[in-house]
Length: 368
Image (cartoon, rainbow, N blue to C red):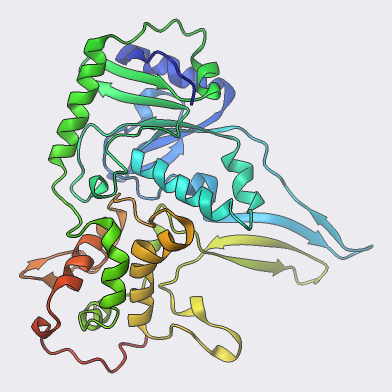
């Protein structure tokens, strides 16, 4: 982390920062689209939507595209492979604190014992311009994980909205290079106090919280692995995969070979996959380790909230609320309509005494 005096970036100068970033990087940011926000290439601040509401897809899809051609191959005149490679510098402008924490989780997954070079080609070329959340989204529960609304480290540049502009903070040498020469005034103590006040207000406004401390989740799921509430939840799950495709920390993908009719050339590509799809755990002779919908529903929940931390040291949930917003199933729980995929509600389900779950048996679940 580069120690640097925080610099104030006024509203009229936001284009100056975007221009400075765009000169060195292909820049992506959240843009209003069809009533939501989506990551698109941007060139001016008027295109950006830097509010707290999560984008439809997380920033990870810039670092690991939904579909990616890994290489092409030919077998005529000897077997030949051609990799496109990736050396373009990219910038993610306006990344929320929860999404930055999600990227850190993906770094652990793709940069651990088995390194994914296709992910790291993009990750190492990416400038992170993060944006603190000065508001609270209805679906968000980032304060439960301490993944928002404030980001403390692991950024190149960080902006915080103020009443009369933005506070800009430099977090790396790459970030310092971008702002050098912009002649921005140093931040005042009043700017820093306003930043702290706005972020405190955003924390206080976040009403959605986990009903138990995060460190207790592993034991909770171990003790209640066969809780009867899993069955009615699984019965109303569509097993559509929306919760995983919208999740910023989900990392599963499939590798496919597309061979042309000549059978002499083709392309190997990567595509996002989801543990909620019936075919995900299918192996030879159509054997399936998670044929039952209840097993897929349970796997996604416990992996996100417990197993991923056991394996990688970071939780698989950052409290962004995308799974809450994009789940199409909204059952009645405890007398009110809730999102089926909501981790807060699922944990609350686990806390219900088993005898209170009426009309539920444990014969296996639903086959999709």
